[in-house]
Amino acid sequence: QVQLVESGGGLVQPGGSLTLSCAASGKTVKIYGMGWYRQAPGKQRELVATITGDIIDYAESVKGRFTISRDNAKNTVYLQMNSLKPEDTAVYYCWAERITESNLNEYDQWGQGTQVTVSS
Image (cartoon, rainbow, N blue to C red; front, top):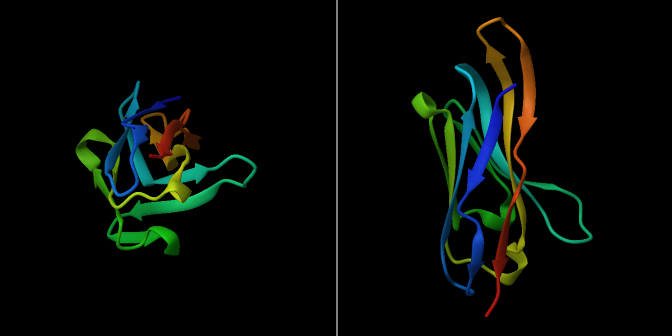
């Protein structure tokens, strides 16, 4: 199966910006949808943003601050995060829906997660 490799997390001050990247590596595949979820300590994993074709969905809490984009040729999804708040602190997980390999094997996949900490 392909692996989702995330990068770009770290520590940032409130009001700052970060860009997360997630690339599917290992095989040539087609991916139907990609996106980002996050999980803060003691909370359930929640949707941040997803992109499927031209359809983009954002959590209400990040609308106007975060922008998701995708490079289909590279099977890579990005999350530009601006005006970060302490409540954005969480582990951010990349997600890929309906990965299809050349042998028609099909599955969903999660990344390993990258920590984003917003603190002064």
